[in-house]
Length: 286
Image (cartoon, rainbow, N blue to C red; front, side, top):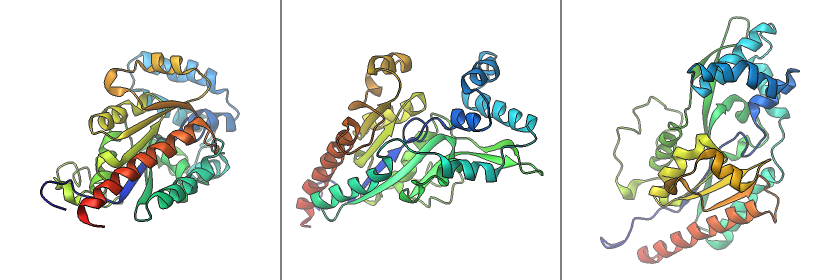
């Protein structure tokens, strides 16, 4: 590398949201597992809190905790572990990771593909899902459990905007188990020391919680892919009120099977970044 060329990183980070991106909505699915109609629960128990000024994430979990306690602390850590193990990902998700790794190796054997998960949902569920071993790190909301084992309070919350801090953490490559809120926010890292430049991040998400990440990666020239299910692309854009800075490179149904539009989008995105890395490698003689 010379002073006239960009610094090189041989890594690509593929970052996913969880709910409605890789798996069905976990709150709705969890409620259904407890014998509760999720649509009625949202309308009667969650929406009134939101209408009275509650944050949407806090309203959702407050209502869930309240219902668990009403049912004798039914939702425990063990229940969430079991539920995570039972939750089936969308079609093709389980095979998607190896397909992307194999493609990267074929294009450039020196490229490493790392997978990360950032969710505003229950990370305890994601950690015990069948796809969990594929991820280098996962972040999301976590519960405090009461004396009788039931969910009692949120001890950690990941908001829509806060998702972006984890993109910076991925980029800087700091200790993923050390999360004191200061480790990466107040630490400047020279471009040549970045673990994964944001230009080499591919982000996949489905909704409002992902919009701050869409904006950041568009600004930093990363790649953003949108996912939708049970609606049209037009409905997706109108519902989220997507602006110019939040647009995605492609919007595809939540189907990760081999020849699906979403899988093709992921493979083209990965190919694009791999070729970018190969170009940089020429300048350093690799």
